[in-house]
Length: 336
Ligand code: MG
Image: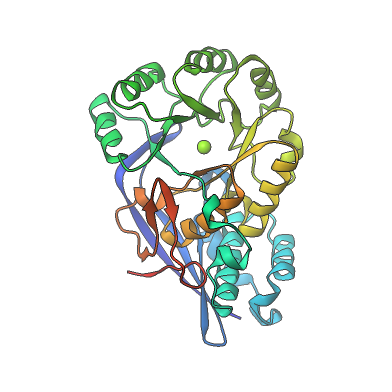
């Protein structure tokens, strides 16, 4: 196998504000994994939160000796080998894992979901994310989200009640709330109780990621399901979180690719936890990979490519509130 890659800067349609800062652009890497004239596409979206950067991804990719690996048919042992060598570089691992799956599915002339034996009719509806904004901007964003059936509202501010009141004034769609670790225990208890009759499906990561005990305390006291996002990175985390959370948010870049994400989802379901497949700000390459495995999840939050103004790839659509891929082989995405 041969790996070539390029760095791309993605610009956001709107400045994205959430607890912990704001963003106008992100730097990501696209992987082109070649074998026998066929190219598998992959993507790495490094997260500073987990200590990864475009430079750290490139340094991992530069150090992989692909001459040891005959072809992507052996994606399982190749992935295990890389996971052992680079245990903390999850976005870098995800990029290679996605590219191997795209390659193999393309080789067999099948869309990835079909290669994995998944049921397209089980794709869950996606939410559309609304970050912190003024009332005027919130109203604009609610309009922009017209085609979506579920809204995801970012909280963790001093004006959380105002945000929810505005959303509820202009939309009666179900909402998912994400505090991004922005609340204290008592604040979370008060706010979640207040949210209980506001048509909320669940609450993501109310407390700091290390505060597993606090989440367990909270879960006993509220009726809305509590999901772990920042607290849940890899399959082994599920064992630590099973009693403290009702559900878990799984992302390809956080988990380290398709193989780890599937393992996490299966493990969570075994412990009767709900699952959501989610994303960072990503192009259609990584979003298609997530959408193709989304039939394995209870919920989807796959709007990352729709929040950027200059996605270099195409191939996805929105159908009846769901992120839908086409039936072309592999991820079914190509350059615009
Ligand atoms: Mg989240």
